[in-house]
Length: 493
Ligand code: AMP
Picture 1 (cartoon, protein in one colour):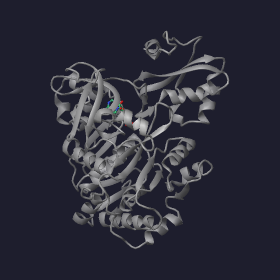
Picture 2 (picture 1 turned 90 degrees about the vertical axis):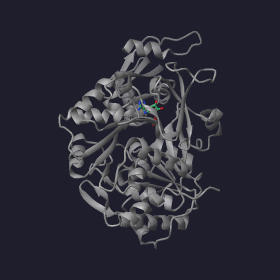
Picture 3 (picture 1 turned 180 degrees about the vertical axis):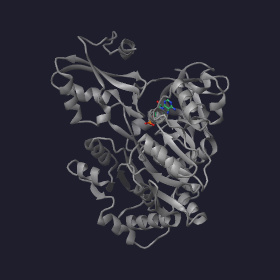
Picture 4 (picture 1 turned 60 degrees about the vertical axis):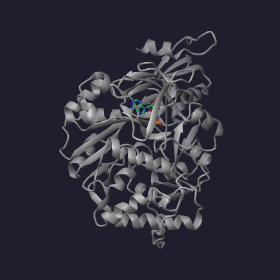
């Protein structure tokens, strides 16, 4: 047994050092001090422990709202595992995740609770309801001791097979991620703020521990989502602001034509490709406030990083890279025979270190494949230069990344193929100035695009729908009968 380090201790540290300072904000309005936030999380944790064993999975499905912070730390205080669910998913997809992780309860916003009710048997507790508020009458108990190898967060990524896989993130993983963020990317203190523009179930949420540890306030936009003007106004109203943004969101900020308020200190971008031209425009508009991360749910937010200082080099090759290995992470590029690639040679990107997940929930085969040989196999292709800067070349998985959200072709293809008039379907990503990539569907079949759109809307999240449908007589295939996506992409380019 290692020493017990519950991620909850990060909130304890902030509450001890800065008890009466503002911790949590909805827009410009203060919701809790650090002492109040710590006490609320401990009460919630004590209430959960009355009914849940340590290790119980408790899901959270909500647009961004301040309660997500108390839920995360409350669930950790109870020694339970949080399962944050992307609020943009279709209720059926949410129900699949709830079933897969065997969640005891899902804390849902009123809107999502209403949509979810007919799709799942899992107990739904509405955030802000009388039952929810009643939990805070429970007497405070100290946080549970947990082994560092105990699960803290089940991070659901979509599998290429169409089924979501839950990356098991332990307290040790989240601690390594937090330390690496503070070492490489941003060093906030209690005079700073983290503004939650991206979904708190994913990118933005993973940054909560680092900023909480340093006593930096958590600011949730009143709209619960990302609006460029609202975001810039909020950054002007709070001190020392930092935020995690998908590349599309950075573009939206630039498009406002407004400069950065002096209180906007750091923008961390990543999760999808940022084109060099867009990055240069963003730096011209907002100044030297950018840092990039490359990571994935399986090595949360932490494989390589392009540091703030790297952005000042003026070299396109560096600006177009994803930076260097993060602190505490070993990154390598492996050739097809498993040996290390030479500089500039392309191969699969792998990494290892304390930040890498323990495996996939309930999926030993996928875990063994992803973690073969003690390395996390990212499925991304890339190459190092002589100075240790990594450039992503292509994704071996054919995932389409649109506006920072991953869309897995196979999943959309399967739903399209379920339409009786569709004979063949193939999804590829087309480069797009606004979204990074957009989904394009090649269809063989006699059917209207509007009918396919309606078919998809009933079955999967809106953001996964194709932006364009192209009807063709046949799909190009190789001699094994496999569709040549490369050829389809070339037609689009
Ligand atoms: P997810 O697990 O949903 O976070 O998706 C992870 C994938 O997004 C990675 O495997 C990459 O393919 C891609 N990705 C993440 N960060 C970057 C980045 N900085 N630049 C380009 N692609 C990225």
